[in-house]
Length: 547
Image (cartoon, rainbow, N blue to C red; front, side, top):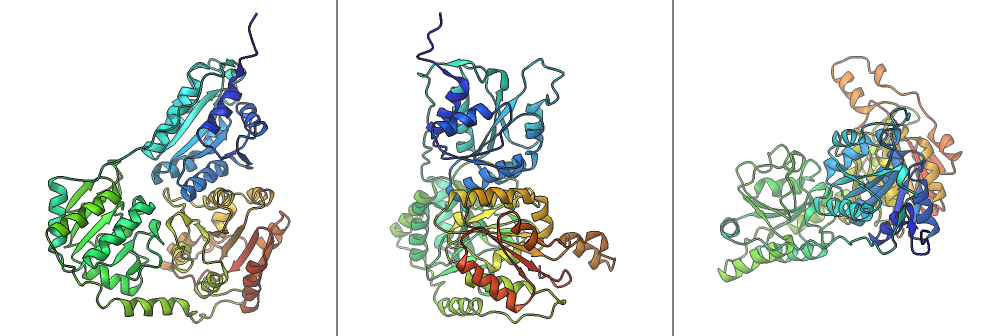
């Protein structure tokens, strides 16, 4: 007779293993292949389970969690159509280098007539995500630990494939999950470092550029120290926005979102040290910002990305340690500072003053407002510390420019795969992970509708501090632009106007419809007085949208 006193079921062991991997938030939608595991996770008080209404938003929520916390996001779904529903989120995570584990059910092998049977490995392969098979009950915990290691060390999504027929198999309680080991990188050294230091020593107008790979507190401190040593301005990519908040020679974003002073500084620079930045075409303005300059790229690992520009020198090593190594080499050679920041303070103060001044509203159609002044008013009404999630659309650069964040982890980027509709799910992940400041989602009416309005119920159930700003111009913006640029009728790009204020109020949101200056003021008041999730339906003129 089998001794059951010292055994547990596989679904219970998997739930316990999630807790061992510090899964504080599990996002999901249950089905027959994962419901017992989720039940064990909840019953064991092993973490917070956030139930979503659509599998895509469950996985997107885990992506939002990962971006705001810097930890591996975890989601769970059942098999077959549940997996096909998350193809876009998996591709988004793969393109974005986001650590993610999706525990996905699978049908029993050989059950050819099961309606939900599909070759799940091939489906996952098409997205760029990794696939880890749960081989047996005896290896299940080890297999799951491997999925977490791959996700964390390679910064990628991993689908952990769990057979439904194994969930009630016995599992020894002595089998423990193996924690993901820390990855310690050494500072760069050798000829490449010395060559790069030589380029820096001879530079008259150096610039330090930081990307999302250089956003640790240690890296920030080392880059600020290096910048002070060589008297260089500091800039960031969009995804590292806010890293140098409060530093006197912080010129902000390098790329298409640069303000005039930043553009002038970047164009005049003769040597760019890019730490943890992929040097995408958006950061380099199609290489206009790097052409004719010496560019030193310092990356924290050897993971490849197709967005890489071609630098003069590429170095791989710990970001903070390599920055300090540059400082030490310059000190040893007694290299003086460049003086590149001498006349910068006054110009940066003027830029800050200009941003603090509300722009004059341009005339728009009756019942609509000018987007830029409206977003700037909302920016002033919002807490300075907030998470920003921007869905994709023609409004997005205006949102990034007018609703800046003060730290990199507070910017959730949803556009790695070029898909609209990813914002709401990622915002729910951010808002359930970060509770000491609000999450602000900016979305177009097309993308917001595509994301599934039913998911707003999840935000209400979770009592999330979520503020949704819908840029509602009644059109699919990019298509509207293409039609109008060719003097064609934009009718095909138009969307029937949805009254988001009335619709979302029925789902439990507080709502404000903004059609003029008075209702815009009401929206600002609603932000200050909010006690539950808030939606602002910002009515815009489709012919007067600034790109």
